[in-house]
Length: 170
Image (cartoon, rainbow, N blue to C red; front, top):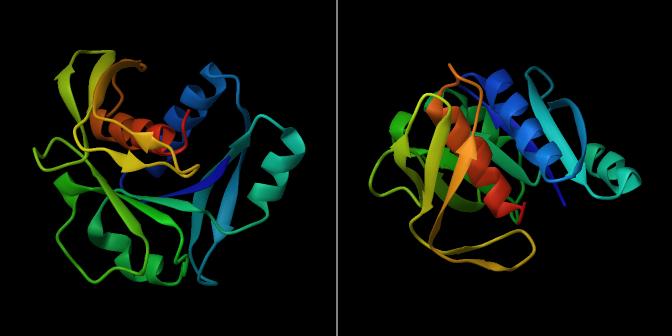
């Protein structure tokens, strides 16, 4: 399925939320870290129904990077995944030159592809506002769905993890 790197913000919380969402859907999940530029290490989640394939994915560079803020743009440029995806938090990001990749936005900004229509203490009503192609090539149509999360979690981290799941057909 996918290997996803998480940069900026509270990457640990987003990693845990992504793990939880994948495990709830019965995905085999491997957690680790990537060293993209020889200096910085980022957390990643690799998953697939097949454990051997998940381990293989974990040995490669991530296909998807969740970019939670603009502080790591230079770091992302070392990634070099022309066929990869950047999931960008539009609430914490100002436009900068980005490496070649497909871009999908998330956040509370009305221009985001994936946003929330309502937020409670432990649930988010997520709205895919604009359709996009997933990693498998399936069209992800506009729709709404609910995502439960632990109370006290940052809703932006929930949105980032949920957007990654939609991109991966989870």
